[in-house]
Image (cartoon, rainbow, N blue to C red; front, top):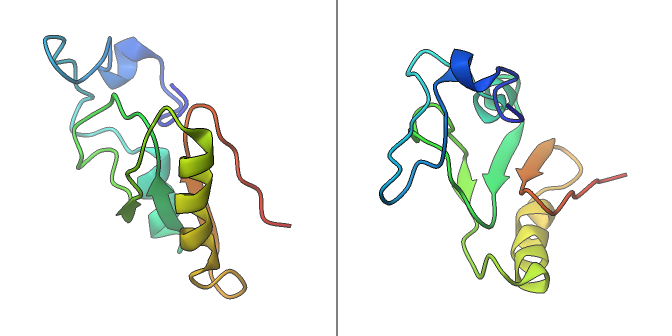
Length: 102
């Protein structure tokens, strides 16, 4: 619901996407990273990722790293933010980390 603004029955994501679960959002769902990208934001994701398909949850960059290490995720996020922090807006998403540029 956080990335789509829709309840599970409306977005199709009833559970986890990976492994034996195989749940996926409907192809017509427009997610937050897609809307932000269309508005000119740079988007990235870091850490665990349990949604799909990638076409619905499209991020400009996948930062990778150890999803159980917040310090590693923060360092990977720093490089994305410092790429061009003044002239371009950005959004980084993770279930535990919120990064705000002031």
